[in-house]
Image (cartoon, rainbow, N blue to C red; front, side):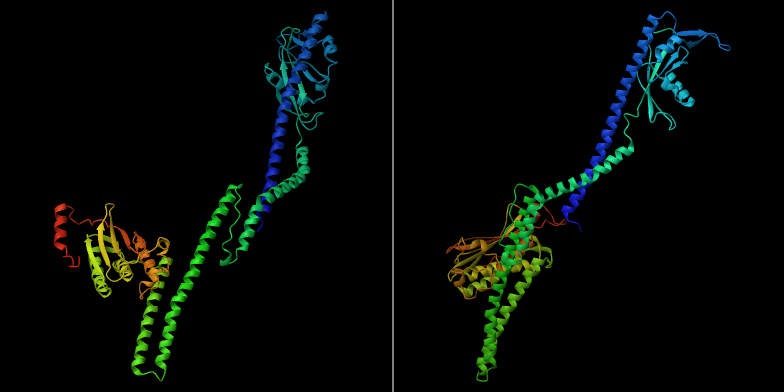
Length: 516
């Protein structure tokens, strides 16, 4: 495939040739029109000269210029030229004729008499039809005549001229203004190679300056060969709007790729680190269980610890598989109308059991009935992740509050508030990153630290249901996680009166736990 420069050169050359042809045709047409206008003016001047000679001859000569003769078969005398008329007009050159009052040619010039009889008859017929307004008529001449091309005719009349003369017809050859087609095309063919060379040269010069920034962009892109060189950026040329937008778009894409590659490297390193420890423990336990010096009781302990590590790795693999499917959009949610109150109360009961082991107070200060459109299993996983996370990082004697409230914006908010170790302002923007765990207080707060994937999965579940998951925290003062979900519209068959709704809520309400 030809390069853009080659196509630009060919296109530019073709455009130049077409423009040259159009310009030549326009110049030829303009020159021809202007030439015919000048010929018309010249014919009028010659006709005025003929009329002026006739007026002067009439005033200077006593004998008439036109005589009348009786001709058999004619109802009235026929005009004929006298020797005086011939002597006056014969010295004049050019093509002209003098017509009498009956529009008969009584005199024709020497040049006009050299034309053949058929052409003279045509000229006479055209001359009779010519108006006396100075407008011209063009008569095409045959190839066997003395002239070539055409003859431009005009008619003039002088009331002060000799009697029995009605008009003077003057013709001017038009071949001097008509550009022959062979000459026009021959000139074009001679100039075409020069025009093509000039056009190609101009295209090369223009293309060299235009595509130099493109070549720089190509060179810079070629230098970015792997993930380690994604820190490089393309030079932004602000003088070219389209190229500036292109480089800006490419730089933004490279920045996203750099972020993705960095996240992938970090993800791989973290996953390897998370798998390395349980695999090491698992191998040590298996080797201890296989040792002949190990007692049956110690072997059972080793196998139990190995099973715990296997369960831990299974949870990690399941979490990674969940996130991978979510990233690829292959994780379909079973959407249905889900009441949140039973799910929240079930999660609250589980949190009470977990809180008792940790010496925590778990309460449910408020729960309002609300339905959402979503997957009940995933929503329970979302709420349970947040509650267990709060319990895990709250020291003994602390408090965890769980609530479900409707908002004025037509949404429902699930909130988990704890009095735990909190999160520093520097770490707060990264808590939803995969495998992220704070290096200080939160990492040391519990020996049961997870993999750092729970909040990432929770955020995905919230987004998949059209909601949001936000966090607010201060180091040493606790954390608040808030899930906001859109409320499902009421079904069509639900009674909407205030009394009926209130009665239904009162009938279906469950008594709150004593821990509230």
